[in-house]
Image: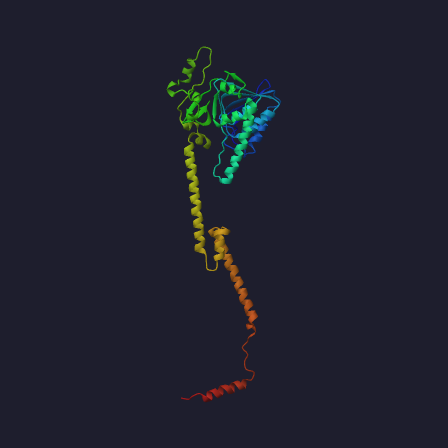
Length: 377
């Protein structure tokens, strides 16, 4: 199975922790996979009979089906489940948080809800209609979950989603998504890596310039960044040094998978995929033309029907057509010889013989008579 996007840990006090950092479901779709969900459920069960589970979230979201199942598994667990948001809780990650018994957000954390989206790939009109129906169902389920968590109306929750709402920790609490605030998990690092927003070195899958102003303002310029030792020295006495925020970083440092590349260079990846699809379509068209031309070049008189089937209805390769044509010719030859033999038998020609005259003397006399009338020199 792909690398886990979660980590379970047992604590000495009989409680457990679940770390959800980064993209939920990783590189593989939870919806089409039967290994990852099973492994997650087994890892959760392996915690044993714990009384408390802390879910630490720093995620920009991911697979909505994974988030729904993880949330339900946590909600059904007999332990008291508390979500703690230290950096970002966005998109599908909010579904997991809403399934927990309590949500504690750091004062400088970020919370985000937005409309549901789905990658359609190459789809026809019927497929698109099914996607629209699926999106409507998924959105309705999420709206119901948000309304239950916040105590707000469905219309109000829907408006938040449609507007793609970004909130600070206190704003998330004010809107009902967080139950408590804390400074314990403060010190989140917000970065602009090649135009993509990263929080605590985790890609949020969102363009940096689309993030709200309060998020962008938390990012310091490279010129303001000092070495870790200098940063530690500049902290007030008795306080631990916080991680420093970095604005400009080489995007290659964050690209490990195709998904990472898509997040950093979405337009480029789309262009590459479209070019690859066009090239593949052209190659398939040229190969089909070459196949049909080869069949036409090999076709012999009398094999028109077989050639038409090979080109259009039974779609044979040139080699398969050649083999079929040889077999057909052999069959036609055997059929022709059998018909000739039958025609001969039916005509009675096999019973005709060259019978000599019964009386040889009559023949001799006839010849002699001919000689007698023949002119003499």
